[in-house]
Image (tube, rainbow, N blue to C red):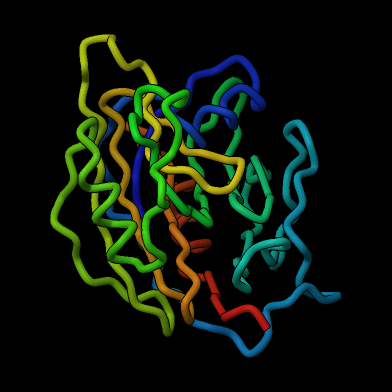
Length: 244
């Protein structure tokens, strides 16, 4: 689960609305990726806290967090960093984003999406989404995103995260010379991923017992070794189970 974007913005709220949309231009992709394993139980419990948006720049305490709500059971561990800096950018049924915030900018992050469709014209949200929507499989999603004219997509590669298989692609937003300042990559319920020209994302699409989820990360052009190591720890800690 890798990708990259540089975030430069005046407030966390604005950037979350974008990164999660673009929040930045195209940087090279890094090699960060998860080696997740499924756990016996990852539902919220006294030792597994539900991920909740704490507002502003409230820092997540070290520990294990589970996405709640989300279509699959998914948990990860926040390490005891020095200084601590991970916080929730968003946590809904359709999108969960965790960001590393060092004022005045977001430099790292990772996200999980319940992505369901693409737009007829990724440069014009008013044109609406495809109708009928894209199919439910991993291949349906990868094909739809790869076919968008505003992107350059690499050939899909097989990937396995824990017990679940899927595909990985790299998407780069083409520069249309200012005619399309924000490109919509996909929709997820009421959320959507907007990217700036030149932005590159490594995207992993998994089939979790019939539920499709999309994962990606945000990383800066100039890496911070300490935060990079924490991000890898988090990605390696990801546990996924089908919803009970």
